[in-house]
Amino acid sequence: MGRGRWLSFSAFFIAMVVLTPSVYAHEQEILNVILVDDEARPGNVTDSGFVEGNGLVFRMRDSTENASMQIKIDLDKDGIFNGSDDNVSVWLTRSCTLDENGSLVDEECAVSHQFVFGNNSQGSYHYQVERMIDNITVETWNYTVEVWPDVHEEPGQPSVGDCFGSGCEEFVEEKSDSETERSKTELTLYAVMALAGLGAFIMILSIRNERLNR
Image 1 (cartoon, rainbow, N blue to C red):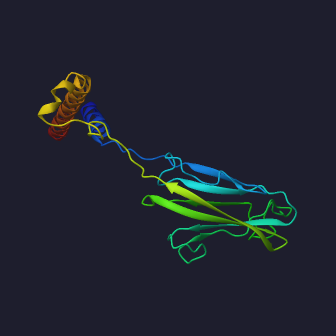
Image 2: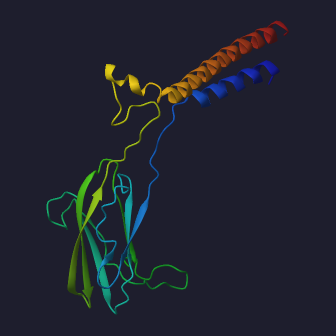
């Protein structure tokens, strides 16, 4: 590749990187819920940090002999925990038997259950933990999960509480720093665009010279 083509390629690559809009994506988080002999810890999930896209993993830690538990999440919010639209786990046990190859002897055996709330799942959900010993239900616990909206504030966008209109002159000085940063960003973008244009021009000249020298 000639020097001219290399310079133009570099210019286009820089422009592409800088001009591509930033994507503010939520990093998924999984909250552990530990199931012991008398409760789920934590049971109710109400922290505002638990947002759409996050998940719960229920881990069976009840060491009572022949104990098992099942999780039922009322996703359609109809008060019934085992409907066709609800999330129901298999019966969880403290441990599962493995063969000599490390595979489950019983493929239905599980010690944990995970569920991830979707990107449009804001709201309150109820879930139920049923505890059995020797295949007899001995307890049922009910809890609530609050799923909060996943809100991302992009730089330069107004936020709640911002002032607009003629009565906001007193805030001009406070916002001068952000306006300066925005101006610098705009100048950088213009410079990159100019560099991209220069790269295109160099590429055209390079191709033209190669053709003339053949």
